[in-house]
Image 1: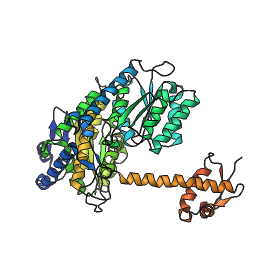
Image 2: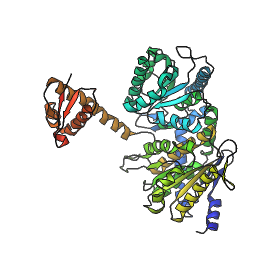
Image 3: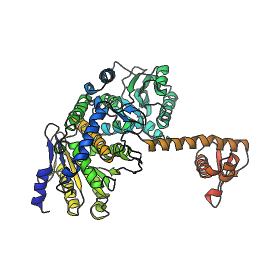
Length: 531
């Protein structure tokens, strides 16, 4: 197509909503002219499926639970009055708690204001708060956030070293629905040890966000923690940003959570429309379906041209891949579905992988995220009639054009500015797009059996470890190969796992395991050295 033809296509297919301050440009996706007519029956079913979910249908039969993150923004739509009540009461308690912290009505045990926030969680219990805090932070925020989102000892040390003596002024939020998530549990224990090492009371500076009656909830009750906030079984981790999981940290950091909820609520209302061309989430889902053949044949590359949105691709990675990456469809048929998501900010990563995007294997489609407002206030002219922001915009438009010239497809999402309202809009836009796409390909977007399988495998390794160490301690002063130890504990078939456990143990002083190296690593010998 020539530029005039592209312009006409742009005008024909552009979605624009001035109330949301949102544009979705699908003109550089190479779908045929009859595409919407062809897929209309599928998307109409997706609309019906989404209506059923919002009405309280059991959307996750594996766990026999509803899926209601949409109710968090519009509680009056909840199917039961107690859910409506719980959402509203929790929002009020979040606001009250944050206000009391900011006004100094809730203080540290030594009478000082809280100035730091340590968030402990993993997956959706960490990515949402992390993304929002990165997107909305300012130098004027009342608390400075830190994060434990792994079970990496070195990572704990880095964060705790940065906090330093300010741990006495640090509030810790532990986020886990079940309270049994090991990474979060480990982070909590590491944080508690750090508080105790400084003669501080972890419990008097700790807050729990968890399901009522969970291990964490009971622990917080017994310990007299500072506060507890609820999670509900009808909110999944990857869609929990507009629950206490995301709203409490955001409120404590001083962000406008009412505006975030309003953006999500307004976007929800728009994306309930049953007409393809006026529903931006439906447009996104259908473009994904076109690009991937409905079978994940192409990757989704997300390129936000804004530093504040640096973590948005990471946030989307979990939302999309955990929701859509499924072995079986709703009928139990093996389909191995999903869409691979990666990306980072522009124009930084034009220097990393746009070369391949333009000229290498054509196994992707791009989503550009464009923000019109560069900054609050005027910008420096760095060239004749051009600011730094003008250059950033130029690189986005240039990259979009360069990819289009080579037949590489792209979507462009445009928002007016980065603020709490627009972040709420982006979250809701993609949450519903994922729901629609899941219906298009007939998978359950709201369970994660693969994640659970990984947890089970990890649990087996952890349970194997004491048997390995016990065997060595019984033979103090003698050294054995991994094969000998595996045989001694009746785990011959797990010899590789035994070898990996021994290698890790020998590299750390904690278990007093010494390695006697051999020419070939797997012939090395290991002994217990208590001295």
